[in-house]
Amino acid sequence: MSDIWWQTKGEGDAHLVLLHGWGLNAQVWDCITAELSSHFTLHLVDLPGYGRSRGFGAQTLAQMAQCVLAQAPEKAIWLGWSLGGLVASQVALQAPERVSALVTVASSPCFSAREAWPGIKPEVLAGFQHQLSEDFQRTVERFLALQTMGSDTARQDARLLKSAVLSLDMPSTEVLNGGLEILKTVDLREELQNLSLPFLRLYGHLDGLVPRKIVPLLDEMWPASESIIFPKAAHAPFVSHPQAFCDALLALKAKL
Figure 1 (cartoon, one colour):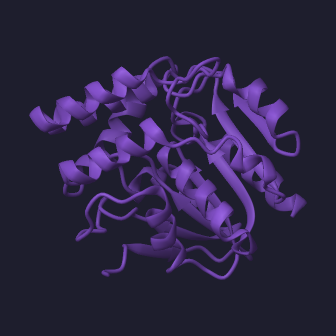
Figure 2 (spheres, rainbow, N blue to C red):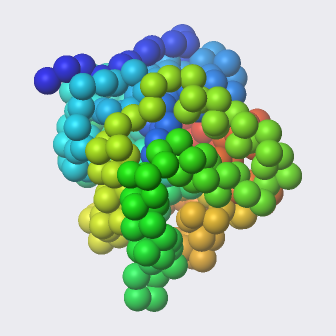
């Protein structure tokens, strides 16, 4: 199996692995790496099939987690955004001894709307899957626009994410479909109830993909975890509110 693209930078004493979201790559973190690299040793990763990690087909969530774990430091804080949040959560479930803390950003243990559970309507995800086969680039662009909608800096945030996508080869339709399949079907709500390591959840108040209504539900379901909602952020709080985002990570590090 080929290795995934992995870059280490920074000289901080704590390892921090950053996992990007669907359709994207590690360049989404460019807006915060300078700030974080004096406090952490950063591990920037392109998930299998995304960005510079070529040569992979669609993978299950467990396969993705295994793939990333194979190249990861012995122990680290794992941070995942959106789909990356599911991968980081799966890593924490598969290898808790390798995780000093779990951080999920604009992520849900169950992205798909279910009975009494707010989320993305399954038919919307299925629609994205259908459009992918027809107009690949436009589908990804629509998804990015959805992610930043609502924040004061929506237009420039979307531009930033778009430049991260377009700077590298697009993932294959198969890989993108596989990612949407994970978003559509995975549900880690119950499994994560038994997680006994520090767990920080970060949300954007205006997020159109991960509704803030799930925050109190998860506060109740996972009482040991901590949640922070950024008031004017949408789905990419680290792009719209980089300073507040980094402050939350430094506060977490201070507690470990």
